[in-house]
Length: 398
Image (cartoon, rainbow, N blue to C red; front, side, top):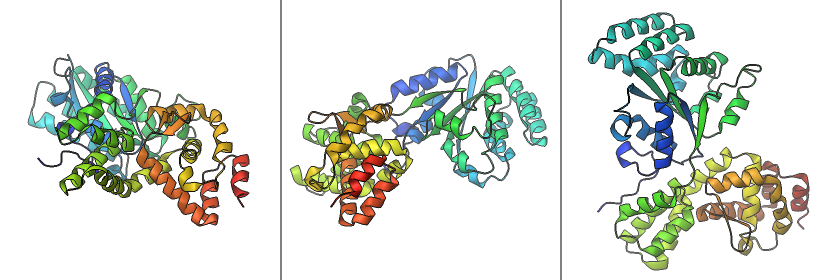
């Protein structure tokens, strides 16, 4: 039996499993003509989920029995960096729909193609696009645009403009023929705040979306994932994978895959856990760097403070972790968010613990590296913009 665990790339629809509550919410929103934003940190499975939704007519029950037919289009904001004009977005968005109408004509095809040609000739302005979508609605069709890495638009000079965001909002809210499913690392509040300068007085561009956060895998989904190994893993193996991953999708897949591989290499017992843990540590460095950089300063503070209370054996009395810990009460929203996404869990000895063992390894290594070079260590904490009194305690280390 080949190694059944996949990490390092998005899953295709046939490979996808779990996330049933999230899929039900997406299905419900789309059937009601709404738009939805899938929010999650790096490697939480956003693209895998979108791949599954893109293949919705095959895999999600309910669309075939709906009175309205759905046409799904998948777009990646990273790929759109090659587009030089906003009209190019709609050329790419509508190309497969028009090809479908030409290759499988019906009584509405001619009217739709004519409306599309008018929109194309007018550079896909919002008004002519709205006319096209009205014809689409009258044809009992709804276009679902799935846009991955949506927050990449914020650094794209072609699309980070009022006419683009405003046009999407207007078309999705007015025509009843367009729904949007977007994926972003940052929550809707951040997206709205980031476009205030483009739209200082109007309604926020992204208030048409409902937000769906991808958290850690549920117990049920985690167990379903490990069933792919059949009888290859025992209870201790399952406990090891859960401890090092915190049931984070990427970490769970990679920990299971690496444990599988070292077992096939002949390692057993604690030796196999040490070997798999070492491989996971090396494989996950980029993931944790990416995750750390995606967090706000406040979230970084919480994670650093909690981590310091759990690695005294590595850092000894060098850091004032007990003095820092009482400041956690100032970060209750961040703590709740970190608990929901599976980074923190309620501990036995301490109030909060790092739930992902592999993250604790990475943080310990970063801190130890800083201690070996005090100037770098001080710069590291300054970079996190810790509170003034916290910085003072750290800088006074003898």
